[in-house]
Image (cartoon, rainbow, N blue to C red; front, side, top):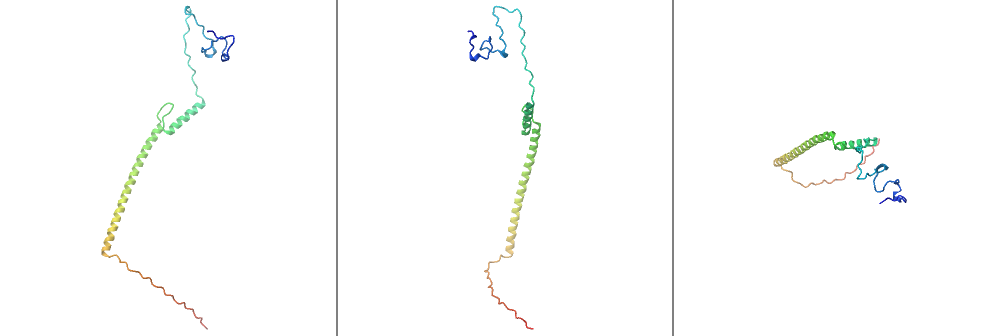
Length: 166
């Protein structure tokens, strides 16, 4: 099947003449001529050298983004996301958190014990007070309730001073 060379179709309009369609040709190069299988080439083909891509240089935006990612990883206590190295700062932070947690736990236990001792002291003081009150009531009987009479207020006469004559 031959390509349509006289009347190119609109889908082939960007392909230069002489290049068959449906064949990938990198960088608009001409396809290599196919040697017939009966004819042996007289010259050895040049060894194919794999071209290595040029080393990718890091732009300023890439460096800034990497720095930001590493910074957030350090803050969050995560390992380095690019190299996978453990975060030394997070390990020290975790150790300090462990120490703070232990101190906090010891302080909570101390507060609980002080609360227990204070509660027992209040109970003992209440018991002693109750017993003392009972002993006092045995010695001095509690007063009996007597009706209280309210005194009637009598009106006092108002005395007018008499003027002195001289």
